[in-house]
Length: 112
Image (tube, rainbow, N blue to C red; front, side, top):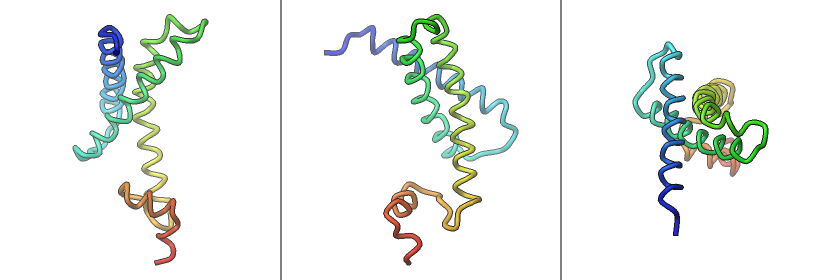
């Protein structure tokens, strides 16, 4: 059984990732759709806890784990934005949905 403190801490750290994503939205001066904003938020919510627990298990950076989670959410926003731009603009077969990613991995897109 999972301890209540672990669940609360995980929710707080996911909030730190989301806070970093909000900072990314504030510094990004372009209009995006709500669906794309939710994708960025989901990616940032995942990046925050991962960075938090990595920094928590290091000796030198244990005190910076909260800042690292916010920074990972902020950086995750721009990493996801950069990857989506690269996949859309510089590909022979633009990747727009999850199905197109699966087709690209299987090698089916170029053979149709």
